[in-house]
Amino acid sequence: MELITDITAMRSWCAAARRAGGRIALVPTMGYFHAGHLALMDRARSLADRVVVSLFVNPLQFGPTEDLDRYPRDLERDQRLAGERGVDVLFAPAVETMYPSETATRVVVGELGTRLCGASRPGHFDGVATVVAKLFHIVGPDVAVFGEKDFQQLVILRRMAADLDFPVTIVGHPVVREPDGLAMSSRNTYLSPEERRRAAAISRGLRRARELVAGGERRVEAIATAVEAVLTDAGLRSEYVAVVDSATLAPQHKVTQRSRLLVAAWAGATRLIDNCALTPSGEVIAP
Ligand code: PAF
Image (cartoon, rainbow, N blue to C red):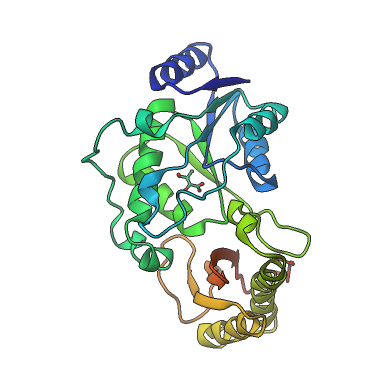
């Protein structure tokens, strides 16, 4: 596996891969790989001839009081893990490479980026969309793979690709979970043992919601109240529990075949998110 840190070198590598007739898959990440990232790499490998994984902790998507400085980083370990997974290139540019001077231009996401996670993280999705647009321009992938754990991000990036005519297929990959149901996240490393134990209540809340829907409940308010109760009983502080249309993120009052349940909750000082489909006809699958 090659490690590339320079934009021109990355462009040349991609141009050569395309000339050789290869389809390129991109997996954008912020590194500190866990099983969720490795699953995205495997999915990318199944979709293309060449797999590029980007590793960039993007300052633009962190608010002034957020965890940019303490975000976990381990390039050596990430390089080893990506290499073992059959990734062709790890693209790991420095901040000065991606943002050489004070940048003026942003991708502005609009209303989709102001709701749910965007309500407490102003500017976050503009930062995500801006860096992903830059990565799409640098790599020119045929397909890009993102985790469904960041469901709002996935919907926003699909929309950005459509609105800005990026010739890329966006693929969402299902959430990968710890044995107790907690969604894999680099931020799980912030949790104390006690918070880690409590954090499993988020996936229990999702499961409770699916059970209610399987039992015939369709009222979003009743479902949200039940999920909040699971979170609160475990000592978590819920930020939002929302049922939205999975394509548009529009809030719903009644569950439909397109419903998605999205949760953000705090375990101590750590903000965790998770989500699952809420399909009336679907059986109850442990989220
Ligand atoms: O999901 C992430 O890790 C980041 O938001 C992304 C898509 C790599 C953009 O920085």
